[in-house]
Amino acid sequence: MDLRNYRTFVFDCDGVILDSNRIKSEAFRLAALPWGEDVAKALVEHHIANGGISRYAKFSYFLDELVPRYAGTQEGPDLEEMLTTFAGHVRIGLESCEVASGLEALRKLTEESRWMIVSGGNQSELREVFAERGIAQWFNYGIFGSPDSKTLILDRELKAGVLRPPAVFLGDSQYDHEAATESGLDFVFVSQWTEFRSWREYCRSNDLRSIHSPKELIEA
Image (cartoon, rainbow, N blue to C red; front, side, top):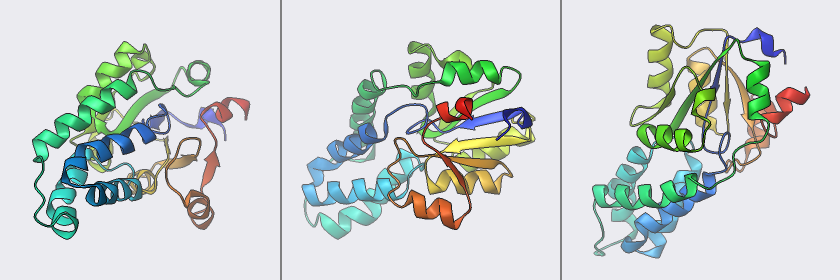
């Protein structure tokens, strides 16, 4: 993979830049737990199976589909209460979780390229955390997230001329790959912290390049 081929590098956040997938899975469980253990577990499974989709869509699905199916007459918090609980747990985790190694060196190797974050995480939350952790400056062409979807963000930034092809998306979910493909970006699967259980089979069947972490791009 020749890094010089790309004018723009697009990164997912959770599982690619930050070791935060498990943090978010636990935050979903804790936010849903007042509705009961079974339905909280079902939400975590839904979250893992739909990596990269925003929390807003997942909690809406939880209330509309999973609560009627699993919770019966059990009562629990509403959407806003769960979002608040979720955000509190996530924020604590994002401030202390591991950052992928080699990113600073990779940035120096690609200093002429544009770097962007396109995440399912909350946009304002991500921007604050990245600034606090001293890594926001690497992503000089934007840190973007929900409530906008990844497909919407990619389409918008392509039309605005911010995301300039040729571009590559580094992600750790099927949705990342689908969003990248729909927008005409190359894709590299990052496996180090993914929760996508069948990622090896998925990469083989879709002829995708996979790396353990972004650091491998330097070594290559």
